[in-house]
Image (cartoon, rainbow, N blue to C red; front, side, top):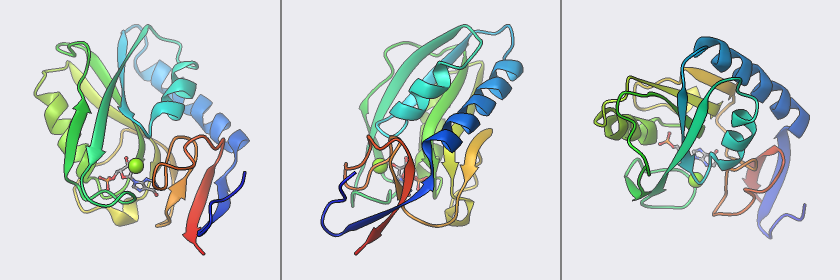
Length: 178
Ligand code: IMP
Ligand code: MG
């Protein structure tokens, strides 16, 4: 993988490590929802790769929808000001819903999304996030399922971007400016 000028990337979580943890999460989620249909709601774009891998290991009746959001402000860290650029295609009223996120950072995005989705009256609403950076939290939110807790570093790959780059990398890497 060629790094763009000005970027240095160091592998934090390799593809095998991610794959192993995704299987564990899928087993836990399958056990917790046993016998109940589950609606996955992936938050685009970051959650696309994680959702694809997670969904294929769920031993449940699964349906999938996506919500696309864009943050205002700069293109790396979120400012918490979010707008929906693609709404859900199907109603979640009365359903068990699991939101699939790439990363929980300050918690502002999830706090906003939770409010939007709860207004649609799902039967239950939980969150699975591949990555969690609890040290950066400014809002009192937590995920029900966490893949990896990571330190306060900026990461890219496996769906996550730096300025829309690197989403296609098979691993999660620490991004640093050179
Ligand atoms: P929050 O509102 O601060 O929790 O931000 C969540 C969103 O910020 C994520 O869905 C990402 O789009 C973005 N984000 C936060 N930290 C990182 C990171 O380290 N790499 C890439 N995107 C990140
Ligand atoms: Mg992003």
